[in-house]
Length: 453
Image 1: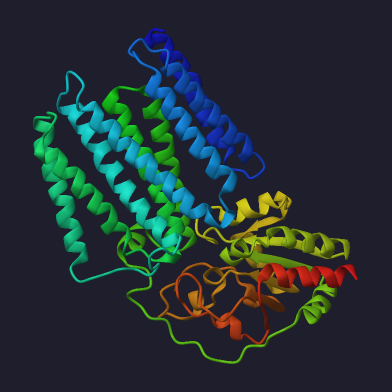
Image 2: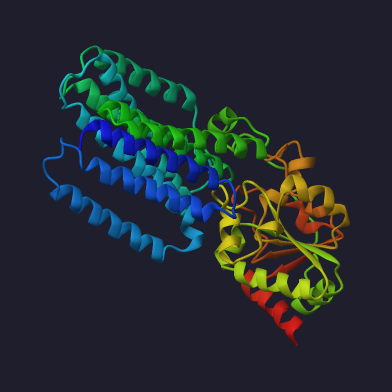
């Protein structure tokens, strides 16, 4: 097949990518959007294999079989609680793939300054994305401390690394030849820079980091597309890069922070929140049932603890029982709840919670003063009143779901431990707060049993 016809099919593939990306913007159409995007990628791969430049299919087929097998295995076995770190690994593999594609393009013919520049960009962004994603994975999976890792002159060190990389790039682009020492040095420095830019970012900022690394992986793929002259790789990479930047901006607005603040402040390392002390009011499942039975409206506020307990199905079951009892049920969704963008939406969609019951933070907060019961399931930072009231708190200024304005608040937690950011929560000591200690799934199952008796 000639490259003219291949590019015609690439246009069709790009259109499917765009339609698929558009449908990912709504929970109701997200599955279809994901399927369209998968078809678009399959079409792009198959059409590329008809190119005259392809001389051997053995390694390509082997790569597709091995990669497809690994993907199918993880898709079937990965737990929902491990999705954030899995997304981080996906970003990382995208980055390292772009690095290798750019590196391989260096051995092509007719490599000029522009081609050298695109090769260098794919290697630089791909390297930063790869090691940055590995650190994000390690923090999310708690294989390393999720707290910010900061030291004196850290920004100076990072600036020096970036300066050296740029210097290597300028010299390399003037004479882009294989085996260049400066090219290999730039690869090593890019890998180090990826580590250095993520270690000072704390756990509460991980949703922003995940979306930003996703954008990086797209930009790396776009640069690799320019390096090898592949139009669909350019388009697909640009779409991912742009979508990731938009999502990152949404995440930052949800936290009332700038991107530079997220990347360079070292979340939780500069300020120390006021120590919270007081007495909590525990409650048992029988009393919780009595309060819920009398409620006219209830909102569930899910967090990472719900994912850990795998409680989304019993939450939906309790919501249905409340509706049968004449109660209005909603689910309050904070943009950065969980450990990746859309984490709670994915969990609740898996449990078949109706999409129209998922209410965003800005829409649920005006209704919170008239809410009979707010049930907080494993969320901590996104409902922490310190974000409004404590100027010393690292999360001060971050918009939260105002559950403390509800008439009664149930907080389901295993213990009084702070959230992923390590910030104490004065909500636990509120006059209208009742702590329901224990595994969230077991506690809610006990309440469900009370409704059924």
